[in-house]
Image (cartoon, rainbow, N blue to C red):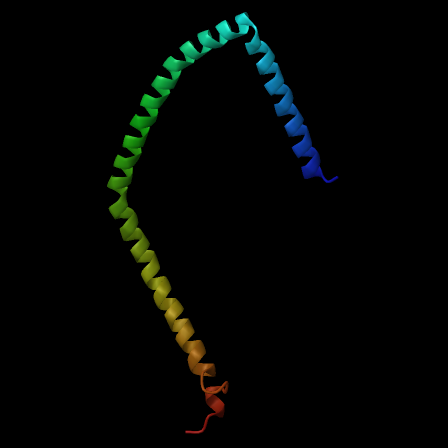
Length: 109
């Protein structure tokens, strides 16, 4: 067996044992009561987390809207020279070898 298979087997066994432990804990009345209490507490945390996530997403959208014109301008100033240089290099390469695979020096005028 290779390393990935061993890791997969160990992970599967660990998750399985954890599932059995949770099942046994919830099978008891004390475990169910503790789970209800934990869920009630984490419900408040989930709501606060969701509110923070909404606020962060709104802030990210605002920053993106503010920065988009600057990024577009910078990209256009970088891309225009690059495409021109690429076109020039391609044109030079095709001119030298484009005439039936002969260089210009061997072509008679």
